[in-house]
Length: 202
Image (cartoon, rainbow, N blue to C red):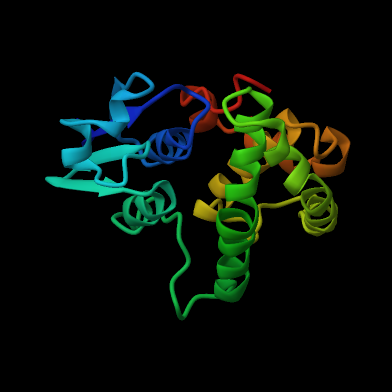
């Protein structure tokens, strides 16, 4: 029987999706607990996650927070399948670049744009980030591989982060599907992504 993981989430489309997809890639048994909007800001949820954010994960007796850190922790807990690239492996610098490009440079602003488009934040958030994001996404799109994953033949955590950021960008109209295919289509076709309902909104 596969190992269990508990994921606290709002819905399929929030940052918990990254963790759910990675958990499916690793063959974990996902136990999902939905959190109503507002419940994440009060006890008992804040006892688990003092930052009052989604997701929170329980895995191997640990409580984990911050979605990108959770993804790293989960991936590096397994060498089979190996979804991370270690310090002495080929493509390590490429791996670190893509982690930073999608997980740090783009994701936060894209989330604000998506939440702005949904009416949860004001329209000024989208206006603030739109021009710069379009420029960065245009540059990144030209760097995406046509016949492989970001770090070659091996699918990694970097591809999960890329899938989340690019899905947000598409949903916000900040990039065209044709600009990111065939790479994006390759992500959508992964069985674990389908099982995680990761691209259901695309």
